[in-house]
Image 1 (cartoon, helix red, strand yellow):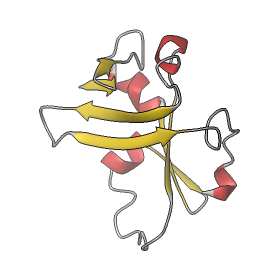
Image 2 (tube, one colour; image 1 turned 45 degrees about the vertical axis):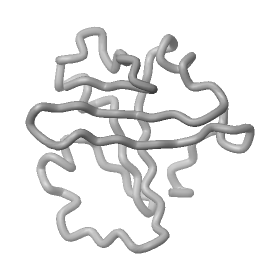
Image 3 (tube, helix red, strand yellow; image 1 turned 90 degrees about the vertical axis):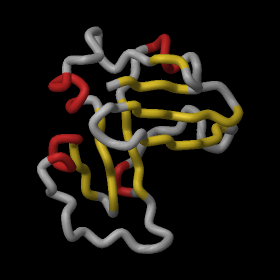
Length: 107
């Protein structure tokens, strides 16, 4: 499994293949509820309705070096995996969404 920002590898854990550490560094928020990667893999989101216009927030704990890549402008976050299709998330950072405190109750 590889994690990339703007096609540059990022280090989620000191040993990026340590799945237990990786699972602990991902949180997904929907309607104020949080889910770890394990929850998704175990099917705990099964049957959950995600409505048109709903917001899904993904919180990923990164090291400082990876955070320095995230400057103003357009970016791509990619998870590459041989077992399932690659996940690609395009996003843009500007003064309205940089250095903002994350508040789960607003998700």
